[in-house]
Image (cartoon, rainbow, N blue to C red):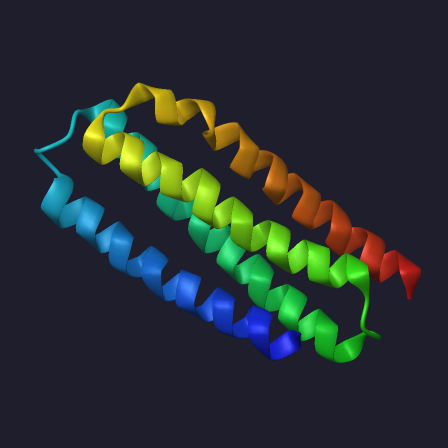
Length: 123
């Protein structure tokens, strides 16, 4: 479990840097300021939660295996895909309805952080 979450965190962090550069260089001037801000919000949250995934993977190597840690890691990953992914697609396509699923990713982030706290408390 620990290697899985560290690897996912590393991949997501890599993609966050790549997408941030893409947004700053390729999308600047092509998107409205609001849409570019949405894109950058996706990048920021992806990076923060990529680091969270790495922290969960490291915690998994120090703590006994726990359902809380597994839930924390998968919730963070789902949050990245749904929250950040929906903001990327919304920004590029302008499909406003995608904004309706963004909060689902935000709830996944919250659940992931709560699960991490519960895993640490259970020790």
